[in-house]
Amino acid sequence: MGSKNYRLLIFLGLIAFVWNGCKPDEDVVPDTFTGAKVLIANQGNFGWGEGTLSVYYEESKTVDGEVYKAKNQESLGNVFHSIASFNGLYFFVINNSGKIVVTDSSYGKIKEITGLTSPRNIYKVTEDKAYITDLYSGAIYILDLNSLEVTGTIPCNGHTEEGIFREGLFWFAAPETANIYAVDVVTDRITDSLTVGWMPERMVLDNEKILWVLNRGDESKNESAKLTSVSITDLDITTTAFELSAMPTSLAYDSKSNVVYFLSDGIWRLRLGQDKVPQSWMQVPDAEFYDVAVHPASRDVYVSDVKDFVSKSTIYRYSQGGTLLDEFSAGIIAGDFFFP
Image (cartoon, rainbow, N blue to C red; front, side, top):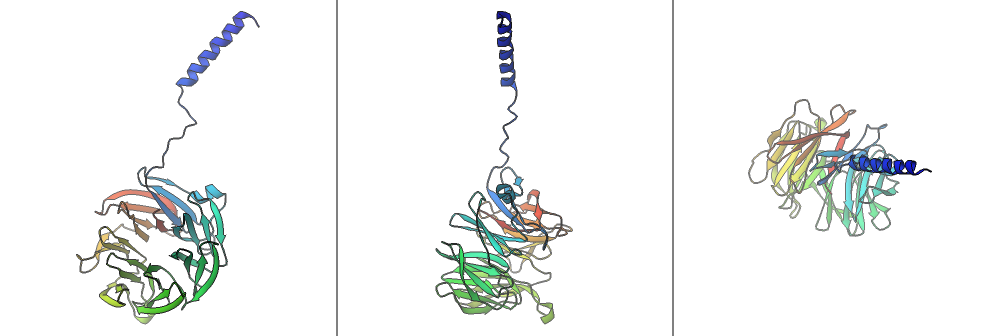
């Protein structure tokens, strides 16, 4: 190669180096996911849709959709009902697929818990044991948290729904009755029951250890929907139940502000120790509110609008003062919020 050509190649190389150094790095993707996470279980259409996992980031106000599918190259299943986390693992309860998908903290699949009929929720009751409520089995499943295998069942009176663990007892709602029941977590036997109102489904425990139960009622029995409070310490109905005019669907509690929220044709709240009756807190015209939850750290209130049950849901995020902080889309039928 001649000296002129050699010098020309060096010159062109230097130009290319300088040019590339001045260009923005197109391969670097800015970090758009910052802040506390909110996990959202999107049920998907019953019978034929796919449940999906969305993750919302509070600081950046961005949503990472289809998180599980992107990580594992498979769908979760049909009707993603609820989320729980313990022992460093996530438990994704897939109702209509009769299974629970267990993942690590990065949503990588570890195992599927199968052999369930129609699981609803999972609760850790001892270091080595969890209970799984179920829609159709007429029982609560007992799960060994070491082997992640079902080891037995607790016979129940039909459908079992939400539950609360308190002082060695697991209290659960039985929607085909007017009662909540207590299970001794040592013997795995039902030991007590309390009448709270027909079709109890949702429950939260307040700072005074009072259990609040949302009951949907039963028109055939002329029983209205109501919100009932129960002291599970002395097993006494401590507060007169509040009758509700519309079918309630969800219940949440802000432990820092001592406020109960529930959905019943809008968002209602009851400031414990202040309000004599629940107060209408937030209305959105034409919204089909489905689930409400309170972030335990920020105290922001999250509520899902599932629209026509076939379109993507809209999530509203409010401050505790009622200011709309954000509005964003999630998957079809956003039915459960989880705050890691």
